[in-house]
Image (cartoon, rainbow, N blue to C red; front, side, top):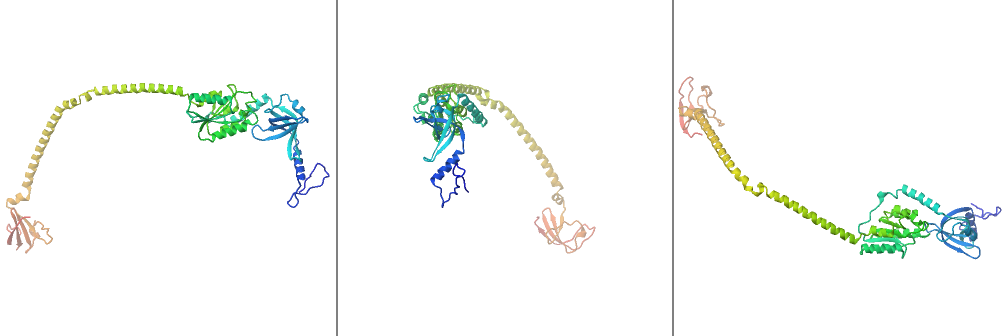
Amino acid sequence: MTSPTGPSAGQAQIPRSTPESPWPVRIVSMKVGQWIDRLGELWVEGQITQLTRRGGGIAFLTLRDPAAEVSIEVTCLPAVLDRSEVPLTEGTRVIMRGKFSYFPARGSLSLRVTEVRAVGIGELLARIEQLRRLLQAEGLFDPRLKRTPPFLPGTVGLVTARASAAERDVRKIASERWPAVRIRAEYATVQGPTAVPQLIRALQTLDADPEVDVIVIARGGGSVEDLLPFSNEALCRAIHAATTPVVSAIGHEPDNPLCDHVADIRAATPTDAAKRVVPDVGAELVRVGELRGRGRIALRGWVQREAHGLAGLRSRPALSQPRRIVDSRADEVARLLRDARRDVRRLIDAETATTTHLAARLKTLGPAATMARGYAVVQRVTTDGENPVVRSVAEVEPATQLRVRLPDGAVRAVVMRAERGARVTEAVSPSKEDPK
């Protein structure tokens, strides 16, 4: 692949750079210059951080991005700066029109500016309003996301300028309200082009400290331009991403930068911020005293109510004369016991008479009574021991062994012969046995 190495159309083609055929530095610088030259003119927005006018008719400036630590070198004629409607100083927000130039001898890049416009207040406010709508649409202002600082923070993080009035106010008010409170300060520039990166760095440092319970971002009053860093998108998103509750105390009551909407609490002034995050020990002691007094009154009233109720219970007859109910029921219990005993005796007597009568009838109808009148029970003796009762002459044969039960015992007999219709049965070899 080949590419032109200069503006001249008839210049020779330069072969591709390889380890065997590397480009000289002059060729590399020339090609870089060609690519930069292709950018043409452009508009750039930023903040002036350094402005130097030299006697040679050239002004040197450093233009810095308001949200990041990125800057470029700018050169222009002093007349270009003089034509600005607003005096240009360090920190001024500007829009510049120019073209980049590459200097091969030094290997440096510079923006050659032909027109400079200062960003007006109206335009800044319009951009802030546009950013406000964007952040609100994304939910960064949602009240449901606001966190409540602890009642008594152990350590209060403070982001402010070194030795500023805001720092003095916060420390003074906090120590007056709660002398034991600890404040850890992280200092940052609170206006100008370097403010946003330093503020974000200080905020993230305090947010990473586990001992810091709440962070206060404090700054005194100022113009719209002075408070621009606190409406920066990067700072607002850093506040939203913090895990520690953040209190915004920027300027005075009329000042309303965007970080006030993103922070968990908006304080009108640094003094108000100290009052919001640090409780007043005097007021708390008074409140504790009031609560203790109310507690004593409530406890005394409760004891009196309970004592009155207990006295009412003790005055009732059931508790004042507990034996009275028993005594009044003793006669009734004795009468019921007598009635119960009488009824039980009557029932026992009736059942005894019934049992005696049934026993007599059973004895009269039983075989023992029949045998006592001269009858006997004849059983046929069998080998299995069942000895069935003989009820007919046909049930026995000659030589059958019999057992004859009498009232006072039993005898054994052997059948000699059977006579039908006869009244006497002859028995041989009688023997007396004990009744079974």
